[in-house]
Image (cartoon, rainbow, N blue to C red; front, side, top):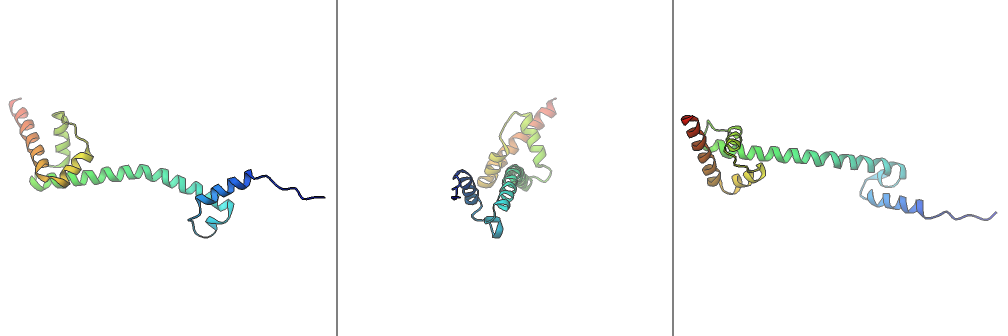
Length: 126
């Protein structure tokens, strides 16, 4: 009986998966079953860490803003600054505030001082 040649579809699929895992070490880049397992694991980690990256950057921005604000006034903090900004309807997101805190400290001092004056004046007058 003559030999039957298989089709190319399964081979093409496995080749595509092998290209994904070509940088993995050992059997993770050679054996089809372990390549599939590692591909699933890698994609799960990538999806999870995209969300974690957003959380980490937000924490970094908050830390930078807090450090810049506390440097000038001991009694003033990040949470008071954000609260007073919301009261005054000055909507700057944390990313922009952190960039301002790094590049131009005087500007963030001006913002915080203006907010302190405005809010304290409103509280004083009622």
